[in-house]
Length: 384
Ligand code: PLP
View 1 (spheres, protein in one colour):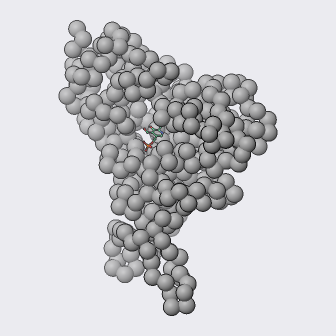
View 2 (tube, protein in one colour; view 1 turned 90 degrees about the horizontal axis):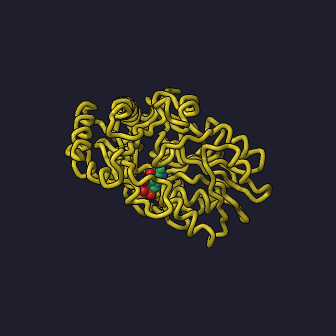
View 3 (tube, rainbow, N blue to C red; view 1 turned 180 degrees about the vertical axis):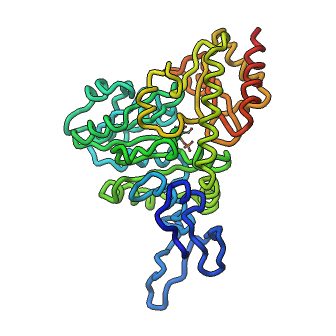
């Protein structure tokens, strides 16, 4: 690879996937490296730096370099899913380890922290992630190794103060980890606010086309914590396949464009339904009525994400009926793709979830916003 870019904005770096030109062919799209094994030198060495496909791959490295640059970090590990990345962030902690995590967060990761983490020597205390006093009170001096936040957090879009949590974690010798899937590096860069590791379900906005499952961990430093996470991925084989890494890199070329558009449309949808009498509440950090608006305005730039939720005034059955009557929004789980998704979230999260049963989660895509508003409006009308 040749012709690296001069210092540029993250959007430029992403648009050109790092700007590499293939030395052999001059191709401006990087070649896809599918090989699982590499030729040894006659002197028995591996002078090109690649040995085997489980620890390393050139296409994966290239996608990692883009994420590292977008997050302003020192190194990124790309894994086969967001869950692989997130659980690796916890499993790489030194033991004994106590973790402080938010009550409102991606449900499957919370389930793992609640039911599986203990068997890996990890104790977890769940607190209101928007309440710094509650986070402070949950710290166990000497035992707490990590504060974990998701911001904005699924599905209420609870906002946590990253800089304050980083200062608190560091005062107690702990790390701050942030699931920044919804904010994306376009709107928020947790490492620059003091976090030690930032995680993405790259399945969502980073890829953006609902056709890759992937996860990333980007580290502030290449320190012992990074080394343990790196070793874990090598040993357990959590690396993503090269084809998926290539698709992810292609997706990231349009990340800034997509996220800006989706954030604008989400704000329009939020404002529209905030005054709809059939809607009890719109949850969106971009609205001044949202409890986390002031902090979100401070730590997010250029928008408040493409994710929002509405609570249907007529109740749970009406919410499910609304989702059944959309024609443009797609009734599906996940988020961050080019197509808009609607989901009755409590049906997914089950008992013990903080998600109200009348809530519909909306992932705003790239369709014309007037079509999205009209479609949701007519679906809400199905309850009349
Ligand atoms: N974090 C958040 C905020 C998510 O929404 C998800 C998936 O929905 C994950 C983590 C897990 O990602 P994956 O499904 O790629 O394992």
